[in-house]
Image (tube, rainbow, N blue to C red):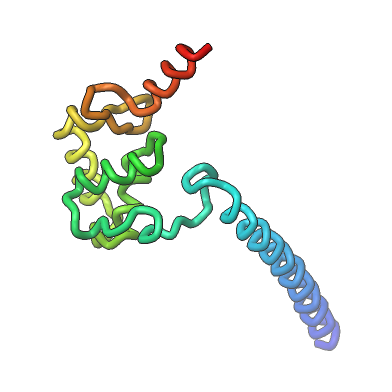
Length: 145
């Protein structure tokens, strides 16, 4: 019985050391993320939390297509339907990011082909002139050369 007690105490000490090591690693990661939040633009690195209200404003008072358009315009990069759903859910526009909500977002994207286009696995915003955002910038840069 005494040997079992020693074995359990040794396991507890090992587990505590493991917890301390993992806690130190979490602290290092959180510190790095704080630095990244200051210097990396929103949406560039996955896993960096976005302050939805500060970045996108009041999405809750918009229609789903208008909210998606605003998200894509401000991000200036394509996003998957799941990413758009997650942002809308965090903003309070959609209650839960479940399968039904995902279908609603996909439906809004597909019902508005004049506003959204699927490029690869992600959706992008089409400007009112029918061009994808950013193409004009690339064309202007080539013209200046």
